[in-house]
Image (cartoon, rainbow, N blue to C red):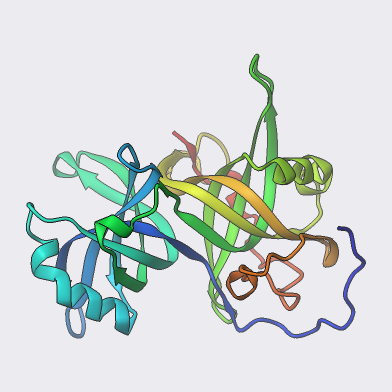
Length: 284
């Protein structure tokens, strides 16, 4: 559905939500020393994606910030840290991002997903779903659409700069995404010229199937630098704004209303460095 700009929506958000939800297994509950202050509670999460019995594992290394999440981990820490026991949970992770993890004594690196465990509820194995899906929702800016022609059809990729945290100090999380949803594919192609041009294209999005990747800059001011991003699949777009004008709004499902972070009050111009990844490290 295409609409005109909503002139009545003037409120700016105070906080940008970027959240991942799903099912997984917690382990390695611990306290992490910090330079100042008390040690921080942390836990590892093996998020599950795919068919039950053959699901892929998406590893997270998380600080625990939610009171209920901390209570859940504390209550199940002994079992979670025992190699013979699987503690399955339904979770919400806020502000996921990719960071480096040194291996081989620091001689090499790989990317690992980090974030904050916001909610956590233990689930009996018999109550787990038959299909697991890690879903990430938020808002951000699309750029660098690329269409690769193959014998089996076109593969459409783009970059997504997601916004997270306080509006006064916005964090930007870089995603390298493959567009997989039918409607999302149509929309990305429809607005490809604007996305790849000088326009500011703000979207509400749903992603799935995350993984951390290492990126190496070959050209530009960041040449020679190693960075990290999150590879993912873009399944849905809930709205699109081009230069502040709302040009698309998805039909709103009754069970998604409270979880959709893409409100009419989302800021309509990108932060000064929202496109700063143009010369940032490329996928290795």
